[in-house]
Length: 363
Image (cartoon, rainbow, N blue to C red; front, side):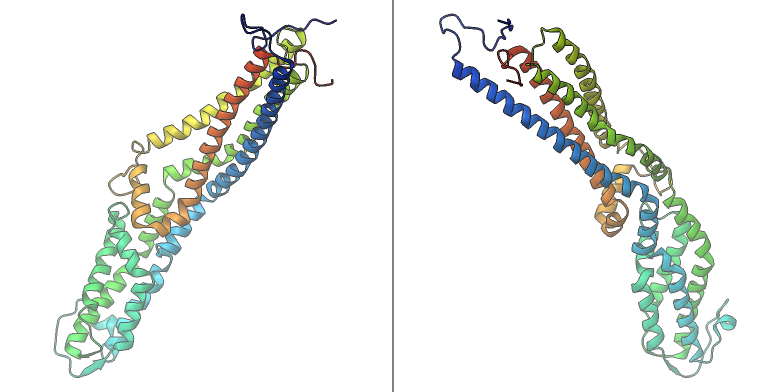
């Protein structure tokens, strides 16, 4: 009969005798169940990584567009020119009710008596509507501690002047007072329109900052990470071959299978560790990376906290999907690290205990 080497899990213990046939059978059944669960974990880990990588790649590729959409639609900079025009034209219409031509009278206006009364309720509502539409949030952004760059602060000052003047307006006013106030609104609106080009250039500079460009550049490499779990699948393939021949590491056949098993396992383990370490390092160094395009050179950590607290709608549009995907990716990679460790433990136990030493898979 063929001699099968004994494993330490089945060597008779002095004083206790040899393990029973039932105990050996239970050991084989437990080993088989663990092997099946290990394969299930590998399949789940592989599918999970594919899913979370898809959650990362799409928002990363679309990051510039998402930031642009957030700035334009959520922070309302796309509507600055339109609503500033509404303010300026509404002020001019209000002045015409007192017989004043804004383009002629308002530049360098000196207060002077203007006879009569005027009802400018419609124009006043139009100005307030323009602020509700976009100008109020643009004013808030332009005054922000991080986004309030010098180019935007000029617009914020003009919007602040308009806000202060509008608070003094009423529906019916004497023309002497309304002319003075609406000329101020008209001049501020015209000044904003002159700055629209500079504002657009500044907004584009902020949108196209170095950190966004770096993240966009990384998108091309993420597709290669879909191959990462298949290193572990290959390791499991050779572990399956080792398992089928009885888990006998003392035979030539067992040794030949163990070599590629160890190689692919090491590659899978190291790759997963690198991804997890990179994710941990990125979180740890968020407080060290500064964004020079913004006012005060805030760190990434400060900017993230600020956006989530003060501009949550912008965060949701521009960065929330990407941040969630990156967190899930690191979590999935950590799960693969755990599976790698379990594979190594199972292979060692299979080699040491040799639960299939008297009957191979075929029998």
